[in-house]
Structures are given as structure tokens and as C-alpha cells.
Amino acid sequence: MKKPDKGEYGYVRAQKKRRVLITSILFAIPVIIFLTGYFHTGTRNNLFTFVAIMGCLPASKSAVGMILILLQKPLEPELYREIISHVKDMTVLYETTVSSYEKNMPMPCIVVSGLNVVCYSPQLNTDVAFAQNHIKKILQGNGYRADVKVIKELKPFLRRVDELYAHRAEWEAAVPFTPDERYPGATRNELVRQVILCICV
Image (tube, rainbow, N blue to C red; front, side, top):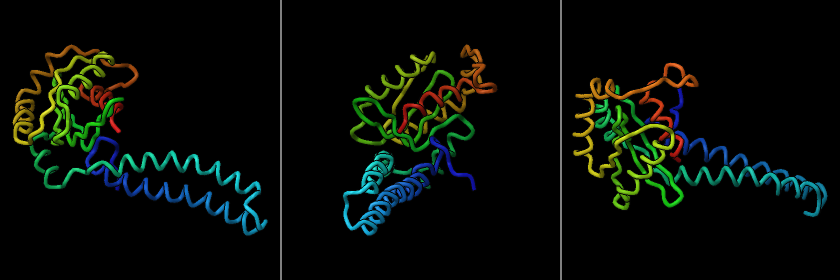
């Protein structure tokens, strides 16, 4: 079974298991090296200790990534089923946390359709205006104009998604788009999705 990629449903659960396992292994290696040197020489003042300390650097880096993913909440299956029944085949990101220098903003679902980017962010402390401006600014910096809306409540979010789905063909056709030769076959929606994915934890 294919493991979900970043931005796909199930990514957070899969990454939690994976990163905990990798981090545990990376910390176990320096411990084994240190203990081998200690029992072999009878002192910690040896080359094995130095190698073990250096081995903690990649393990510590991995631990940071592990902590970041452990702080994220996966999308509940019932909620996913409800959202996907409205999203259908539109371009979407699931289980994302949009990051900036100032703050991280959990967004369980982001839908891209033409000039519209609609984000569902039920967190009470999400600064809607900041999140909208941040995503819009990043997209503009990459050459994509967009109307970004962050919605905190599920029903209004799903209503907006239904509107996008009903008018997706006409709205997307009205957006001028020159294909990017670096990404042959990619639609504008897919390229916008990739830009947003780059600012997600």
C-alpha cells in the first residue's frame, strides 16, 4: 500500500510512526557506539565517545521533525469522509499546517479552484486575517494571483466548497494560465497546491 504524501489524507498518522521509529534508531546508534567504547576501554575518554557525540547531531535534527509532526492532529475519518463528499475531484490539500516566521496555522483542508483558495481552520486561535494575507503573499511572490479565504466553521466551509465545485469549469477556464515547462502537464491548480505545500510543516 502506497504511503500518503505530504498534503494527502493519512500523512500525519503515517509520519508520526515513521519519524518516531527513525529518531529512535538514530539515537540508539550513538548510544551503542558510546557503550561499545566504554566497555572496550573502561573509560569514556576515547574516540568512540567523540563519534557518539557527533552521531547525536542527525538524531537531534530528526527529533525536531518528530516533535513538529507529533504536535499536529490528524484529520478524523468521519470528518474526512464528510469533506471529501463535497470536494470530490477538486485540487485539495489535507492535514496541513501553514507555517510562517511568526506562527504555525493548522489547516485540515485547503481547496484550490481557479483564483480561489479556501482553507478550513477550526483552531480558535487562528488569526484569519494574518493567515489569508500570508498565503496570498506567498502565492503572489510565486506569480499566482488568488483570493484566499480562511473559514473556521465547517458548514460555511463546505458551502463555499460546493459553490466552487458548481462553478469550477467556468471559473478555472477564465483564469489566464501559461503552463510551466518545468512541470509538464501540471494545471494551474496543481502548481498553486505545490506552492502552498512548500510553506506547510
